[in-house]
Length: 207
Ligand SMILES: NC(=O)c1ccc[n+]([C@@H]2O[C@H](COP(=O)([O-])OP(=O)(O)OC[C@H]3O[C@@H](n4cnc5c(N)ncnc54)[C@H](OP(=O)(O)O)[C@@H]3O)[C@@H](O)[C@H]2O)c1
Image 1 (cartoon, rainbow, N blue to C red):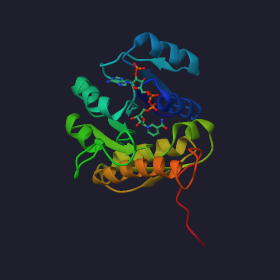
Image 2: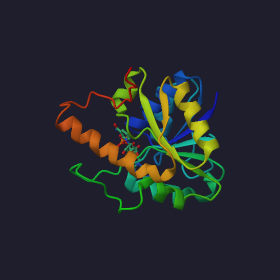
Image 3: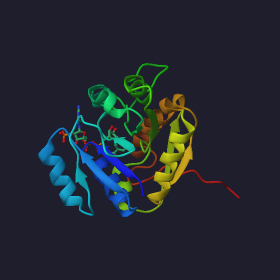
């Protein structure tokens, strides 16, 4: 069992918290609106607690479940409170019409978060290629992840497995930009060839 903190109170936070609680983890929910965080923790039950925004999170793994635009400001506000933590960035960085990325060429949301985080924190990109409503439904899915620190990636992979999901290491944090591009691709697939957001992107090994 691990101790997980989730910053954000929205769809992804709720879906990840439910699966983490089912997986037997201790879950701390954190939001900028304390009353809303306490409400969500109570609704989740199974011992979920509400932490205080901006103070040192209880979890060794800290899931940043806020929109891309808020991610760097939140990490900056936390500052040294994230020292030694494994920070899981789940954000998508799509532009408004999902035809491209809002980040400049040569970087990614995850890399910008890593620059803003304390040097002792390790950022791992994960979960951005999984739709929240599919995650909430249960069942096995592939979770693509990227990061520079082997130990941090191993911790995130073990966490992913404990949720009944399959972690797939895509490489170093420089691969986060392609995972974020994959998030855009998924929206375009939903609007075009797949025709629905009710799908997951999984890797199959043909016989
Ligand atoms: N939904 C999906 O299918 C999906 C899939 C993969 C990845 N993602 C990524 O997951 C992240 C969360 O998405 P979501 O769908 O869960 O969004 P959501 O339902 O809109 O929830 C976003 C949460 O972030 C909080 N927030 C926003 N700006 C903040 C800030 N500056 N400081 C602190 N908290 C802030 C909001 O707080 P308030 O309640 O106070 O407004 C809200 O609790 C996003 O980065 C998204 O790209 C989403």
